[in-house]
Image 1 (cartoon, helix red, strand yellow):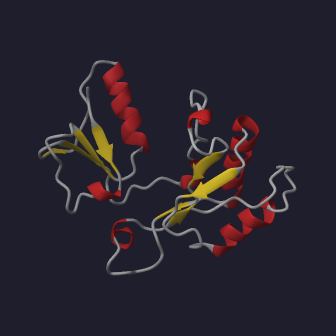
Image 2: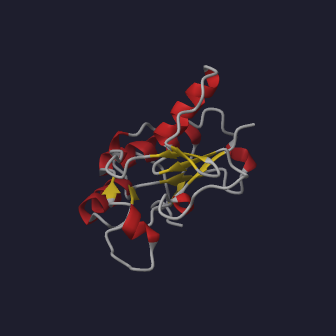
Length: 173
C-alpha cells in the first residue's frame, strides 16, 4: 500500500515528511495525484522532487492552476446516503487569501485566486441536477476576496434564474 498525503500542513518550508508516509505532495495536489495514479497503474515509479523521510512531490511556487478551468467533481461512484447530510457537498470558490496576517500560513504560501462566478455556478448546478445537492459548504479561507465574482454568484443563485429549486442560498461552513 502506497500512502500519499498533502495539504496546507505539509508545506515545503517546514514539513520534511514522516516515516509513516511514502509521498508528500507540496502545493496543489490535483495534477500530482493524477500523475501518481497513472504511474502506479502502468507499474512505473512515481516521480518525486526530493527525498527526506518521505519522497516529496513539490509543485513549483510559480505554478498555480486556473481554478475556473478545473473539471467538475466526479461523484458517480459516491454514495451520498452514507453521510449525515446526504444532500450536501463541499464547494471551493478560491484558494489563498488577500490579507497579510503574520500569524497565518495561507498569506505567505499561496497567492489569492478565485474561480469566476460562471464556473462556480456551473458546479452548483451540476451537483443539484446530477446528485440532488441543495446545501453547499464553501471551504475557502476567504470567500470575499473578489467581491465582483462573489456578487455574481449570489445574484444568479438566489432567487435563481437557472431554476434551482432551493429554498435558501447555499450555506457557508
